[in-house]
Each structure stands twice: as structure tokens, then as C-alpha cells.
Image 1 (cartoon, each protein chain N blue to C red):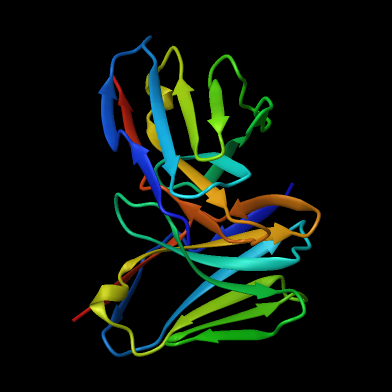
Image 2 (cartoon, rainbow over the protein chains, first blue to last red):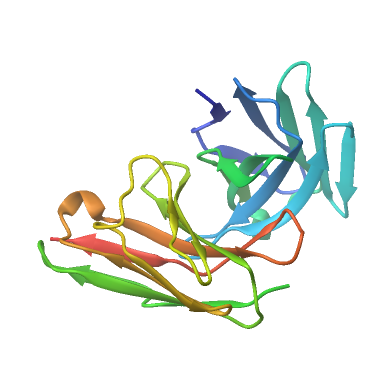
Length: 112
Length: 114
């Protein structure tokens, strides 16, 4: 069955450093991959989408890579700030289905 | 972007009772989705609510337990019926706008069943 793995352990980094989160998947060939941010008591908020034919996508301090051979996406936040502290979810989607499959998320803590 | 109002934001319920969660969108959308998010786990799709037709349920979820209404293109309800402590979770509604792939989510309903 399809499986998405995100590091269940929280990532704890110092303000100003680059945070790198990993999303690995198996038994799936997604047409695109998305990253969402979720704060406590809130619903997820869309951040970035990257398609299978794209290697990298950037938006301000965010960068996403997508390696369909390794079946992996990396999500980077440069010059991290305490306000970036949240849980980050990856989600996979296919052209033939409207459904998204979500990972369980990785919690990021940025220390001042 | 779509703005979604979901209520209640949280509730504590007794075993055997039912709770109806409401989701209101500020624009007309074709597809609305109901998710469950259990502690430390990923979002799991319960069903897709289609206006004018019955909801489509995912494996492991049935209409008798999670009846859904979709009376128009801006509103949907999810009822959690005959609740047990295992139903304690966050329930989220979400929508797609047009042909876009990204989802917009409500703030969620934190449900605790005693």
C-alpha cells in the first residue's frame, strides 16, 4: 500500500539556521507533491507544490526539491525564525485522482 | 483563496451521543472533503461531499457512522454518530477551488469523547 514517511521526531534548530525536512514515499508515483504548514489548533495551510517533472521550487525563504528516483522530497527553510515553528506536512497527489495522501508531519522548533 | 468557517471548534461529548460539525465556505466549490486527524497521525480522508449526490466514503468509513449533508455549494455537515472514545480526534473540512490542486482547510473541530 502507499506509504509516506516523515520524521516523527521534532527538529530543533537555532534561529538563523536552515531547517531541512524530509518526506519519503513508497508504492506510489505521484504527479505532484505539496507541503503544508499546521499550527496547533489550526487547519493545514498550503505552502508549495512541486510537480514530478520539476526538480526544485522556491518561494521566498522556502525551497522544495523532488527526486522521483529516490522517491523523496526535501523541504528547506533558510534563515529560520521562531515564527517558523510549526508542524509541516507533505502530501502526494496524482493526475488521475483528486485525493491527497498526507504524511504525519514533522514538528519544527526554532530556538531564538 | 477560500475562507472556511468550521464549528464547533471543540466539544466534549458523552459516549453514545452524536455531534454535527458544520463547514461554511465563502465561495461556491464543487468538492468538499472531510478529514480526520488522530494524535500524531496523518490526515485521513473520511469522505468527499458532492452537492446534489451522496457522499463518497473511503475504505473504513461508513455512512451510518459519519452521515454527511451537502445542501448547496457553500455548506456541508459531518455527523459523528453513536460516539465512542475511539472517535476522539480532530475533524477537518477542506475544499478545492476550481481545477487547482491545493486544499484549503477549516480550523478543525477537536472532539473528545468520554
